[in-house]
View (cartoon, rainbow, N blue to C red):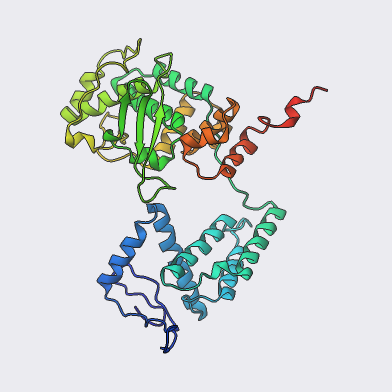
Length: 400
């Protein structure tokens, strides 16, 4: 690595460490900064990046490249960066505006930049500049300035609640006329119902494989989340979606209907799916207690949810987070939800809906966290405050 902030272009590289301290004698001597080959740097970076989700990795890389380029233009040293340099970086970008006069960058983006800069400094055994008082106060001052002006407020998706989920699923089934419609209905019903009752993040739904979902005779579905946003090392978490009294919104039934499609595709492709779904889709009883098929090893590791085309071609890759976002919005639109509501929906609406509905049903925070995997109850308070303000609120007891 260069001693002057230059990064080897042939491979993903660690940020260069500059101004290495001179060698000292005695117990406090700091090891000299080694000059590593591009292969060695690539191996280290690959190991570092496995600690985080792919989206976090992209952000850390992109944010660091942006900061380094800015420093190069102004003659600043990016590593180790002086706190005043970081404060200058934040305030300069906070002042940038679009042609319509809106601020280009939200405070959440500025905060993420500091986290990225801190990360690479810690990775190179350097003090994180974001931990200094001037950087902390700069961010706090910018947040207050933005808030006072009403600029770039945090946008949160609207939750989908239980009645809305039931209505959306029922409408999809009523509108399924062709076998291609029935194919889409089975997939989208499974995405929406499991995503809601399992309080899944988009990335968790996208990452599910057939081997991760098993039928428990008493509990319903046991769904193994191998990795998540808050579990990058893969400790894993099992979520349960129980049997329901009615079959039409029974998670094991809805999943079984989709599993039959996936296995038909595995064995015979599009033609097998068309044969399975040829004719009216009669769904008049529970199918969850029918014997579940034994998965072949090659099928077990394939994605649960996949993209599909209008003609009925089912993909072999996992449905992306953006694809899940599209499923939710399209289903809500077809069900006739208001345009205002649809505009606020997103991939997180299922998870937000679970938390909101759970609180309305009288669940306690620790019970909600058992399903969501949240580590901090304070995070749940955001949902309660914005989408369920009356539950647990003393004002609900007033009768004037």
